[in-house]
Image 1 (cartoon, rainbow over the protein chains, first blue to last red):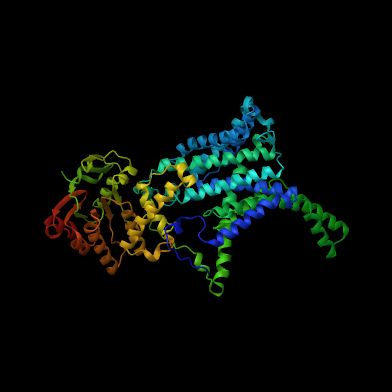
Image 2 (image 1 turned 135 degrees about the vertical axis):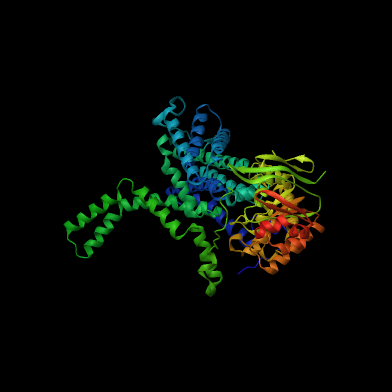
Length: 383
Length: 252
């Protein structure tokens, strides 16, 4: 175990508490930088999606994890970013400019959504954000002069400094990675300054935050705006990666995926967003595997245990039918959320911390270390 | 002119008069206790001052300024800090970040500066950190600096709440039952701290308290309330011997 001996206030402020962090994070960055020259193009494409999902995850963490305002409408902010990019690109606006504009517009709309949300809490806020997402989805489908309706919009590859960046090129991956890293660093900066602490204060007790001089309404709107703006930036990258966008891509299911990202990763730390993003991006290949290989494997197992050819074929078709059921993905999402909420509310990152502590304390680890004391006297009447 | 003054302060919930035309004044540098049976309206007065409730009528003045219409977050900016009867701490944050929230009224940096963590933000953070450290030392909270609130015992939380209020460098501090839930030794510590706050930090204290021994030890003056009305005002002994107060506590 390492014991930190702090001698300066700087020790509490710096991003990396000790040199071990510097080494491990530079190693991680080095691996991520050489990845495009080593990994297959399929894996690289997955990695780009991890970056985009993780960026949205960080945005959602600011709002939900740190300010305590749940949102099921982040697909709409992503859509606003994506459509702004596609629309402005038609008028030959350069990439950096429409990238910024998309974030700014999403942020502005985020702030506007934040205002009515000021009076709402918990489940009511969730319903309000869902309604917002439906409104945006509907607008995208109906406002045909701008969004081309349900036929969707094509978006050309971005060009930076006169060079066209293909969506499969290492450069595009580096842009996504840079956006993710900058988002994370910016968020960490925010969290160690007064604004970030005000967010956390609002999450834990609005009454106390107010009595300490935090303008709760202003900071909630700020949190909504920041979260939406980052999601807008991610939306531009999302549009470029897919090169085609249409309203049915930004449905409630996508918002739920974002919630899964932070819920499964862990809502108390930015690590959670990245881990959750890796998890959610891996679900699709898993489903494909379920669909393509699982039936054959199960039939094979059945055959080795003495099932006849007809029975094996029968089993194979049954399993195949099950694996390609409509809505299987949604069911899997639901089961995953339930299992995590029940058995690991701290998410993958929480589990990782427990494993780390287990080895650090080796024979002395107690499960109770991570148990939080519950106090029930907290008054709800002053909310 | 008094330092802090409430004039004909009333709070009615329908027909219930929680606070009924209460007037009192706090002089600079004194410790004033409000006592009274349960439901007398003590905490309601605090909630009126910190603007959790809107007064039905009446006015509140602080440093010759009418603060009745100020939004709640501005009350803290004026230099009035408070603690809560049932402890309102930020449960899932460390003690240090709880105390740093207390510094919120002194933060001057803009959002964009914080996103980039410019040198000015860093310098400000160090100032905040130093002030917080002084309060930590004042209230002997050194062992808990990096602990999460959710794992701390009740007595410590009570002190942390006081610390958070002190971190904002208040001119007037409102203590809502500072000794509730504390054992005898903790209450002793609390009484020393309240007196030190007055003598060393020059903070004016307005306190709601049930523990009469604590009230007797620290208060300069006492106000007794019942059913939202002032029964008696004066020194602790005067108020305790007042026939109306005796009647309110023991029944006539």
